[in-house]
Image 1: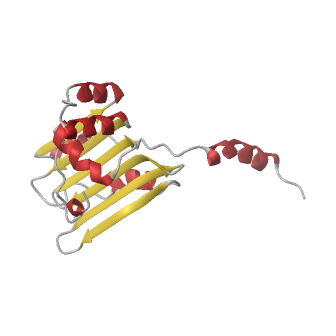
Image 2: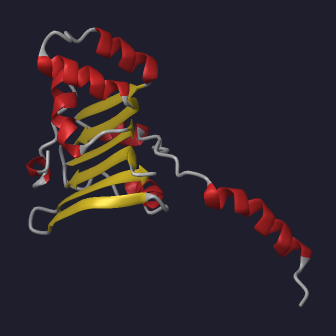
Image 3: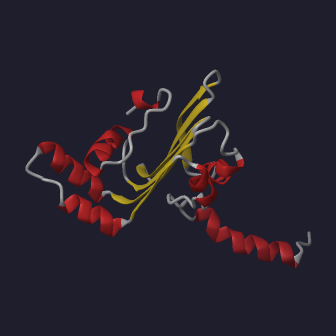
Amino acid sequence: MKIPVAKLALACLLLPTLGAAQDPKLKLPDFGSLADKATESVNISLNPWLLRIAAASIDDKDPDGAATKKLLAGIKSIEIRSYQFATDSAYSAADIDAVRLQLAAPGWSRLMQVHNRKDREDVDMYILVENDRTNGFALIASEPRQLTIINIVGSISVEDLPRLENHLHLPKLDVGQAHLLM
């Protein structure tokens, strides 16, 4: 049996990627055109340094504050993109397909999917688990006049999301039934 050299070389190049851990940080597209169309837009990018500054400003004498500080210690980055529009269908499915494709990669698991056909609302929530540890969280929520994408890199549970919203003054997510899980 003869294996062509090109196929063997390609297999050797791909082997290291098979064992590599999936990247919990999503590559979000440049949503500049959506921001231009939006009546309201939120673009939040918190790196480890900014998260440490946020944690330092939280009063750890308060039990809730101490729990939030502990939570922030396990988070490496937070990316939020949220857009509201004056008209329906101001964005296309193609605007979020690149993100959905990344979440179909090995390691990512869908926690929930809520689809409301009547109101045309969709919520997809994903986690990335490696070695029995959550290393990433992603949420895509879409309505005819709103699109929100959240990516958190680090260890976090769904139950901890409201704590982050409150202490970091992040935008509240109230799409469909997603708030029932938080």
